[in-house]
Length: 257
Image (cartoon, rainbow, N blue to C red; front, side, top):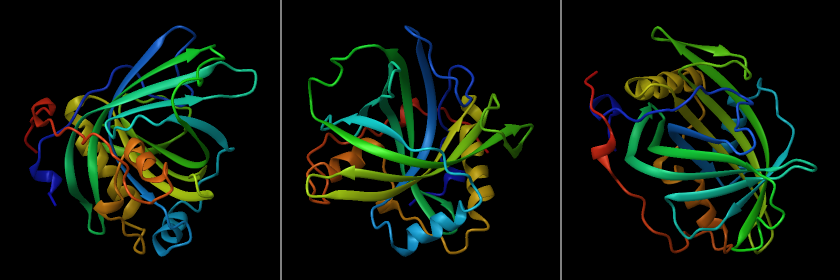
């Protein structure tokens, strides 16, 4: 376990980040972020109950369905979001590096990961003919914090910001090969200039978790979507065979705090 105040700072971002700012037809949107994410597979457990209480005042977005390609790797993800009468939005993401288990708050330990996402709209009815896909229905509660002159403050989801952090709790329903599964994910995703990202992520942790005294999140539950999908895809509850994620600290720029 590592104190992030003593570790290297992280990553970069390309383009502005705001709700509804996805790519246009034929355009590729590229976004670099750092994130910490946890999956709570006991949807009725104490951690899940505490997480819901933390987001109790945040409105639930309408359910949406994402379809994930099972890649057999935990450092590469491919997702298609399909809506009736709309082109599919395809997002590929790959892991650039990880700091490993890091204490983010007195009761919160997670793995900080650096991801690059590429998004593209496609009108291709044959998109899912190849490979193994899993459908995940999501109901999300999302907060957005903007960062300006060293201060984080809540902003509207549709507002654009040059730096900030999205904070989410999402209920997940899926078929795990045995029956219908139900999990939760809690995540913080920081965006903005490279030199600010870790400060933004840590500030968002304080903003969100200071008042959530009942919530504890452990490193064992912290992982990205590709690794979580590997654990549920065969219904075993154990990680499926996957290529280990890289730990590429050379790509994490160093700035002293």
